[in-house]
Length: 226
Image (cartoon, rainbow, N blue to C red; front, side, top):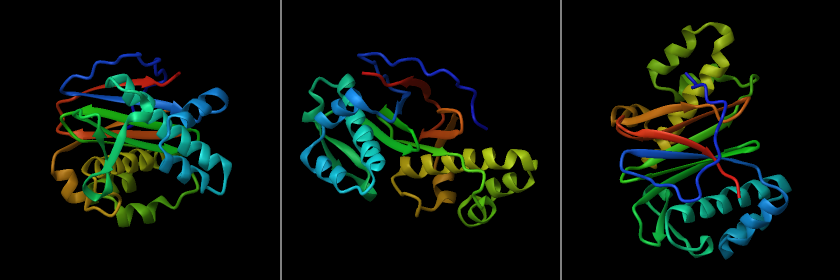
């Protein structure tokens, strides 16, 4: 179930990422000077993509997520945020092309919040979802969940089913994103392959999870601020 994490302390300016650690950064949807700072570090193709969004909030969410990713990665590696280059890895999952550094990362956004996970030496995936109590979760669980998770949801007390659904969903998504398979992947095979997932509480009304290889990793959660 979701972990009680009501406080996400402000992250360090120069975080140290050791082997066996996963860092998760909580990023609020930016506005004003923060949004301008995020936009300023985007690559030309990222700016072009942001301009294609029909709704302003979608564009702002994209700018915040990808600008914050660059600004956070630049805290770990000696370069300017706008100098970072990405490439598509397996199944299209982005990876760091330049500077050369053994950093793995993943991001997710929903509503007013963005989560960015960073690790070294092992793949990582993260997911965040705004919890909607009107969702038809029974049908989704039947078609998408591992049978064990679907049974756990079906037999849970009714008042716990919505938060449990989103907890299980984000853990599933985080594993799939760590593997790089996306939602079309075989979650049964991925779960058995040794992807450990941990639940997060990003904010009131949101569920989240982070996944990485194995179970022997330490987790640190921070909030990003300029």
